[in-house]
Image (cartoon, rainbow, N blue to C red):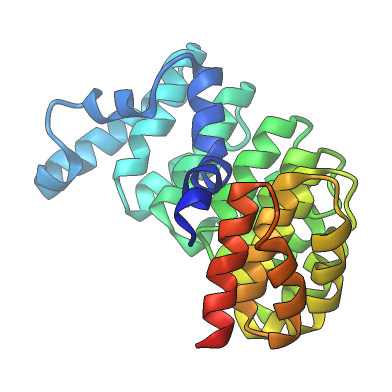
Length: 268
């Protein structure tokens, strides 16, 4: 990825982490010091005892304690932790539900896909649906992909954008048509993330190249054009070269560098 594009891409890719930290008024790093011994250094019996303690904490009346328990359980990659977090997806607190979703994504247990997909489709809080979408990005498979494609039509643009980011993580060629449709989204954030996802899929996204070229010339948002320029290089269709040469002369240095990097890729 072009050097000048790396920082804005990282911010967009991990915006849920930043958003959660702000909403919780604490850092996720806090979760690492909730126990005196890191999970990977604990014996099996110590891990089981800690998971049991945290599972009980998830059922207390204190929402802050439940949130902390949900975050801490992300360090335990076993069935008991996953089951406790799946149950927490129905918590009355939106912050607990979001923390549970994020932790399930971190654990990476595919058995959580159904519960996360349901939360993505039905939770009334945009923040929770966004967390569920990002979590599903870490859990590949047809059920996860189907839920994320459906979320491209969510009423909230940040959720639609999160779904696009996660589909880029899946890099599934079957998602090219819905991601191509998302290039027409009214939200510039969604358009940018859809373009980046198409680039992550690579050559299988070739059918989207004409639309991407048109938007590279006409979209009014700078970040959308930057992501399109990068995507065109990753897709690898040389028909994009004329548009990229024009973009390489743009006054926006981020766009110009992205275009130059993509030109190099296409000329290799």
